Length: 321
Image (cartoon, rainbow, N blue to C red; front, top):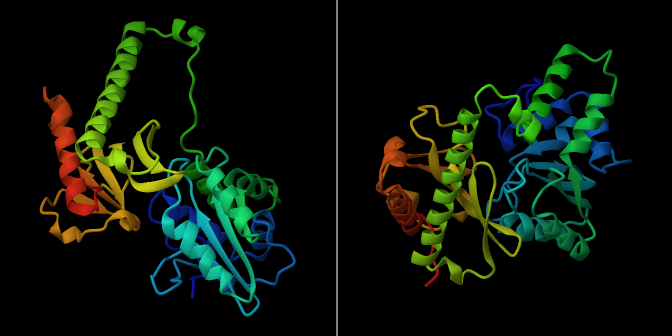
Protein backbone atom coordinates (compact mmCIF):
# COMPACT_ATOMS: atom_id res chain seq x y z
CA UNK A 1 0.00 0.00 0.00
CA UNK A 2 1.19 3.54 -0.74
CA UNK A 3 2.85 5.17 2.24
CA UNK A 4 1.14 8.09 3.94
CA UNK A 5 3.81 10.54 2.83
CA UNK A 6 3.31 13.34 0.34
CA UNK A 7 6.83 12.85 -1.04
CA UNK A 8 6.67 9.06 -1.42
CA UNK A 9 8.73 7.76 -4.36
CA UNK A 10 9.87 11.17 -5.68
CA UNK A 11 13.21 10.77 -7.43
CA UNK A 12 13.76 13.28 -10.24
CA UNK A 13 11.98 15.80 -12.41
CA UNK A 14 10.30 13.45 -14.87
CA UNK A 15 6.94 11.88 -15.66
CA UNK A 16 7.19 9.38 -12.82
CA UNK A 17 7.81 12.19 -10.36
CA UNK A 18 4.72 14.13 -11.42
CA UNK A 19 2.69 10.92 -11.38
CA UNK A 20 3.74 10.05 -7.84
CA UNK A 21 3.31 13.62 -6.60
CA UNK A 22 -0.19 13.84 -8.04
CA UNK A 23 -1.13 10.51 -6.43
CA UNK A 24 0.38 11.48 -3.11
CA UNK A 25 -1.69 14.67 -3.05
CA UNK A 26 -4.70 12.37 -3.31
CA UNK A 27 -4.03 11.05 0.19
CA UNK A 28 -5.77 14.24 1.32
CA UNK A 29 -9.51 13.79 0.78
CA UNK A 30 -10.15 17.42 -0.21
CA UNK A 31 -7.37 17.48 -2.78
CA UNK A 32 -8.31 14.05 -4.04
CA UNK A 33 -11.75 15.42 -4.84
CA UNK A 34 -10.27 18.46 -6.61
CA UNK A 35 -7.92 16.31 -8.70
CA UNK A 36 -10.58 13.75 -9.60
CA UNK A 37 -13.05 16.50 -10.57
CA UNK A 38 -10.39 18.14 -12.76
CA UNK A 39 -9.80 14.76 -14.39
CA UNK A 40 -13.50 14.53 -15.18
CA UNK A 41 -14.05 11.76 -12.63
CA UNK A 42 -17.14 12.91 -10.76
CA UNK A 43 -19.84 11.22 -8.70
CA UNK A 44 -17.74 8.08 -8.28
CA UNK A 45 -16.71 6.79 -4.86
CA UNK A 46 -12.92 6.52 -4.92
CA UNK A 47 -10.74 5.90 -1.90
CA UNK A 48 -7.03 6.61 -1.71
CA UNK A 49 -6.35 2.86 -1.64
CA UNK A 50 -7.97 2.54 -5.08
CA UNK A 51 -5.21 4.65 -6.67
CA UNK A 52 -2.07 2.83 -7.79
CA UNK A 53 0.93 3.62 -9.99
CA UNK A 54 2.85 1.32 -12.33
CA UNK A 55 0.37 -1.55 -11.92
CA UNK A 56 0.69 -4.24 -14.55
CA UNK A 57 -2.14 -4.82 -17.00
CA UNK A 58 -2.46 -7.54 -19.66
CA UNK A 59 -0.19 -10.50 -20.22
CA UNK A 60 2.27 -8.21 -21.98
CA UNK A 61 3.16 -6.63 -18.63
CA UNK A 62 2.40 -3.05 -19.59
CA UNK A 63 2.49 -0.48 -16.79
CA UNK A 64 0.18 2.54 -17.09
CA UNK A 65 1.19 5.57 -15.05
CA UNK A 66 -1.93 5.48 -12.86
CA UNK A 67 -4.73 2.95 -12.40
CA UNK A 68 -7.79 3.72 -10.30
CA UNK A 69 -9.73 0.53 -9.69
CA UNK A 70 -12.25 -0.96 -7.31
CA UNK A 71 -15.29 -3.23 -7.65
CA UNK A 72 -17.18 -0.70 -9.74
CA UNK A 73 -14.64 1.27 -11.80
CA UNK A 74 -11.43 0.90 -13.79
CA UNK A 75 -9.64 4.06 -14.89
CA UNK A 76 -6.27 4.23 -16.66
CA UNK A 77 -4.37 7.54 -16.69
CA UNK A 78 -1.38 8.07 -18.98
CA UNK A 79 0.80 11.04 -18.04
CA UNK A 80 2.90 13.12 -20.46
CA UNK A 81 4.76 16.26 -19.39
CA UNK A 82 6.87 16.87 -22.50
CA UNK A 83 5.05 18.00 -25.64
CA UNK A 84 7.29 15.79 -27.81
CA UNK A 85 7.17 12.60 -25.73
CA UNK A 86 4.58 10.84 -27.80
CA UNK A 87 2.28 7.88 -27.33
CA UNK A 88 3.76 4.43 -27.75
CA UNK A 89 1.84 1.53 -29.25
CA UNK A 90 0.98 0.03 -25.87
CA UNK A 91 -0.54 3.33 -24.73
CA UNK A 92 -2.84 3.66 -27.73
CA UNK A 93 -3.71 0.02 -28.45
CA UNK A 94 -3.22 -2.21 -25.41
CA UNK A 95 -4.73 0.18 -22.86
CA UNK A 96 -8.07 0.71 -24.67
CA UNK A 97 -8.32 -2.99 -25.56
CA UNK A 98 -7.80 -3.87 -21.91
CA UNK A 99 -10.63 -1.54 -20.90
CA UNK A 100 -12.98 -2.83 -23.60
CA UNK A 101 -12.87 -6.23 -21.90
CA UNK A 102 -13.91 -4.74 -18.55
CA UNK A 103 -17.57 -4.62 -17.46
CA UNK A 104 -16.84 -1.87 -14.95
CA UNK A 105 -17.30 1.87 -15.38
CA UNK A 106 -14.19 2.70 -17.39
CA UNK A 107 -12.11 5.62 -18.55
CA UNK A 108 -8.80 6.13 -20.36
CA UNK A 109 -7.46 9.61 -19.60
CA UNK A 110 -4.41 11.18 -21.24
CA UNK A 111 -2.97 13.84 -18.94
CA UNK A 112 -1.00 16.19 -21.21
CA UNK A 113 0.27 19.77 -21.63
CA UNK A 114 -1.87 22.09 -23.76
CA UNK A 115 0.78 22.31 -26.48
CA UNK A 116 1.13 18.52 -26.71
CA UNK A 117 2.10 17.55 -30.24
CA UNK A 118 0.02 14.38 -30.47
CA UNK A 119 -3.39 15.68 -29.42
CA UNK A 120 -4.85 14.57 -32.76
CA UNK A 121 -3.92 10.98 -31.91
CA UNK A 122 -5.95 11.22 -28.70
CA UNK A 123 -8.85 12.86 -30.55
CA UNK A 124 -8.93 9.98 -33.02
CA UNK A 125 -8.93 7.48 -30.15
CA UNK A 126 -11.80 9.30 -28.43
CA UNK A 127 -13.85 9.01 -31.63
CA UNK A 128 -13.23 5.25 -31.63
CA UNK A 129 -13.67 4.69 -27.89
CA UNK A 130 -16.24 6.69 -25.93
CA UNK A 131 -14.30 6.22 -22.69
CA UNK A 132 -11.17 8.02 -23.96
CA UNK A 133 -10.57 11.67 -23.00
CA UNK A 134 -7.79 14.20 -22.51
CA UNK A 135 -7.09 16.53 -19.57
CA UNK A 136 -4.54 19.33 -19.52
CA UNK A 137 -1.91 19.58 -16.78
CA UNK A 138 -2.34 23.36 -16.74
CA UNK A 139 -5.98 22.96 -15.65
CA UNK A 140 -5.00 20.56 -12.85
CA UNK A 141 -2.37 23.00 -11.60
CA UNK A 142 -4.78 25.95 -11.71
CA UNK A 143 -7.41 24.07 -9.71
CA UNK A 144 -4.86 23.09 -7.07
CA UNK A 145 -3.40 26.59 -6.83
CA UNK A 146 -6.81 28.25 -6.42
CA UNK A 147 -8.17 26.01 -3.67
CA UNK A 148 -7.91 27.17 -0.04
CA UNK A 149 -4.59 28.90 -0.61
CA UNK A 150 -4.55 30.85 2.66
CA UNK A 151 -5.37 27.93 4.96
CA UNK A 152 -3.74 24.89 3.42
CA UNK A 153 -0.81 23.15 5.12
CA UNK A 154 2.74 24.13 4.21
CA UNK A 155 3.51 20.64 2.92
CA UNK A 156 0.62 20.96 0.46
CA UNK A 157 1.97 24.35 -0.67
CA UNK A 158 5.40 22.85 -1.24
CA UNK A 159 3.93 19.94 -3.15
CA UNK A 160 1.94 22.18 -5.48
CA UNK A 161 4.97 24.45 -5.95
CA UNK A 162 7.12 21.45 -6.88
CA UNK A 163 4.51 20.15 -9.31
CA UNK A 164 4.20 23.59 -10.84
CA UNK A 165 7.97 23.91 -11.18
CA UNK A 166 8.34 20.58 -12.94
CA UNK A 167 5.52 21.15 -15.39
CA UNK A 168 6.49 24.73 -16.22
CA UNK A 169 10.24 24.40 -16.06
CA UNK A 170 10.77 25.28 -19.73
CA UNK A 171 9.24 28.74 -20.17
CA UNK A 172 9.44 30.30 -23.59
CA UNK A 173 11.86 33.25 -23.49
CA UNK A 174 11.73 35.67 -26.41
CA UNK A 175 14.21 38.52 -26.83
CA UNK A 176 12.97 41.63 -28.59
CA UNK A 177 15.22 44.07 -30.44
CA UNK A 178 14.75 46.45 -27.54
CA UNK A 179 15.97 43.78 -25.08
CA UNK A 180 19.07 43.21 -27.17
CA UNK A 181 19.81 46.94 -27.45
CA UNK A 182 20.04 47.18 -23.64
CA UNK A 183 22.54 44.32 -23.31
CA UNK A 184 26.02 45.41 -22.22
CA UNK A 185 27.85 43.24 -24.74
CA UNK A 186 25.98 42.55 -27.94
CA UNK A 187 29.00 40.71 -29.38
CA UNK A 188 28.68 38.07 -26.66
CA UNK A 189 25.00 37.67 -27.43
CA UNK A 190 25.72 37.42 -31.17
CA UNK A 191 28.34 34.74 -30.49
CA UNK A 192 25.89 32.72 -28.41
CA UNK A 193 23.21 32.93 -31.10
CA UNK A 194 25.74 31.83 -33.72
CA UNK A 195 26.80 28.89 -31.54
CA UNK A 196 23.21 27.72 -31.11
CA UNK A 197 22.60 28.02 -34.85
CA UNK A 198 25.65 25.85 -35.57
CA UNK A 199 24.48 23.31 -32.99
CA UNK A 200 21.04 23.12 -34.64
CA UNK A 201 22.67 22.68 -38.04
CA UNK A 202 24.91 19.91 -36.69
CA UNK A 203 21.96 18.02 -35.22
CA UNK A 204 20.00 18.39 -38.45
CA UNK A 205 22.88 17.08 -40.59
CA UNK A 206 23.39 14.10 -38.29
CA UNK A 207 19.70 13.24 -38.47
CA UNK A 208 19.77 13.36 -42.28
CA UNK A 209 22.73 10.97 -42.37
CA UNK A 210 21.08 8.54 -39.96
CA UNK A 211 17.84 8.44 -41.97
CA UNK A 212 19.73 7.90 -45.24
CA UNK A 213 22.28 5.34 -44.07
CA UNK A 214 19.82 3.20 -42.08
CA UNK A 215 16.94 3.40 -44.59
CA UNK A 216 14.71 4.93 -41.93
CA UNK A 217 12.83 6.70 -44.71
CA UNK A 218 11.14 3.33 -45.32
CA UNK A 219 9.24 3.84 -42.08
CA UNK A 220 5.81 5.06 -43.14
CA UNK A 221 5.30 8.81 -42.64
CA UNK A 222 8.61 9.17 -40.82
CA UNK A 223 9.25 12.68 -39.56
CA UNK A 224 11.56 14.46 -37.14
CA UNK A 225 10.82 17.57 -35.18
CA UNK A 226 13.14 19.64 -33.04
CA UNK A 227 12.79 21.42 -29.74
CA UNK A 228 15.37 23.17 -27.55
CA UNK A 229 17.12 19.88 -26.77
CA UNK A 230 17.22 17.97 -30.03
CA UNK A 231 15.23 15.87 -32.47
CA UNK A 232 12.35 13.44 -31.89
CA UNK A 233 11.38 10.70 -34.34
CA UNK A 234 7.73 9.92 -34.99
CA UNK A 235 5.35 8.67 -37.67
CA UNK A 236 1.60 8.96 -38.10
CA UNK A 237 1.46 11.04 -34.91
CA UNK A 238 3.00 8.15 -32.96
CA UNK A 239 6.29 8.64 -31.13
CA UNK A 240 8.80 6.02 -32.30
CA UNK A 241 10.58 6.02 -28.97
CA UNK A 242 13.93 7.58 -29.74
CA UNK A 243 15.46 11.03 -29.81
CA UNK A 244 18.86 12.58 -30.41
CA UNK A 245 20.26 15.72 -28.85
CA UNK A 246 21.23 17.46 -25.65
CA UNK A 247 21.09 15.38 -22.50
CA UNK A 248 18.57 16.92 -20.11
CA UNK A 249 17.97 13.97 -17.77
CA UNK A 250 19.16 14.45 -14.19
CA UNK A 251 19.85 10.75 -13.67
CA UNK A 252 23.21 11.20 -15.37
CA UNK A 253 24.93 11.62 -12.01
CA UNK A 254 28.43 11.54 -13.45
CA UNK A 255 27.71 14.66 -15.52
CA UNK A 256 30.23 13.34 -18.04
CA UNK A 257 28.45 14.18 -21.29
CA UNK A 258 26.06 16.65 -22.88
CA UNK A 259 24.77 14.61 -25.82
CA UNK A 260 22.92 11.33 -26.00
CA UNK A 261 20.71 9.13 -28.11
CA UNK A 262 17.69 8.31 -25.96
CA UNK A 263 15.74 5.13 -26.69
CA UNK A 264 12.53 4.24 -24.89
CA UNK A 265 12.56 0.76 -23.32
CA UNK A 266 9.52 -0.26 -25.36
CA UNK A 267 11.32 0.70 -28.58
CA UNK A 268 14.26 -1.62 -27.89
CA UNK A 269 13.77 -4.85 -29.83
CA UNK A 270 17.18 -6.46 -29.33
CA UNK A 271 18.78 -7.55 -26.08
CA UNK A 272 20.44 -4.55 -24.48
CA UNK A 273 23.21 -6.81 -23.16
CA UNK A 274 24.31 -7.35 -26.77
CA UNK A 275 25.34 -3.70 -26.91
CA UNK A 276 29.03 -3.94 -26.08
CA UNK A 277 29.67 -0.28 -25.32
CA UNK A 278 28.93 0.37 -21.65
CA UNK A 279 28.55 4.15 -22.02
CA UNK A 280 24.85 4.28 -21.26
CA UNK A 281 22.55 4.52 -18.28
CA UNK A 282 18.80 4.18 -17.81
CA UNK A 283 15.86 5.26 -15.73
CA UNK A 284 12.37 3.78 -15.40
CA UNK A 285 11.49 4.40 -19.06
CA UNK A 286 14.57 5.31 -21.10
CA UNK A 287 18.05 4.16 -22.05
CA UNK A 288 20.46 7.05 -22.60
CA UNK A 289 23.43 6.23 -24.84
CA UNK A 290 26.10 8.80 -24.11
CA UNK A 291 28.55 10.42 -26.51
CA UNK A 292 32.12 11.33 -25.48
CA UNK A 293 32.40 14.78 -23.93
CA UNK A 294 35.06 15.91 -26.42
CA UNK A 295 33.17 14.83 -29.53
CA UNK A 296 31.92 18.38 -30.20
CA UNK A 297 35.48 19.69 -30.41
CA UNK A 298 36.47 17.18 -33.09
CA UNK A 299 36.81 18.54 -36.61
CA UNK A 300 34.83 15.59 -37.94
CA UNK A 301 32.14 15.61 -35.23
CA UNK A 302 29.28 15.27 -37.70
CA UNK A 303 30.58 11.95 -39.03
CA UNK A 304 31.53 10.69 -35.57
CA UNK A 305 28.09 11.46 -34.16
CA UNK A 306 26.19 9.91 -37.07
CA UNK A 307 28.38 6.78 -37.01
CA UNK A 308 27.86 6.30 -33.30
CA UNK A 309 24.11 6.82 -33.62
CA UNK A 310 23.98 4.26 -36.41
CA UNK A 311 25.92 1.72 -34.34
CA UNK A 312 23.51 2.17 -31.43
CA UNK A 313 20.44 1.82 -33.66
CA UNK A 314 21.87 -1.33 -35.27
CA UNK A 315 22.53 -2.83 -31.85
CA UNK A 316 19.26 -2.16 -30.05
CA UNK A 317 16.34 -1.72 -32.50
CA UNK A 318 14.96 -3.55 -35.50
CA UNK A 319 15.73 -1.55 -38.62
CA UNK A 320 13.79 -1.52 -41.90
CA UNK A 321 15.32 -3.45 -44.78
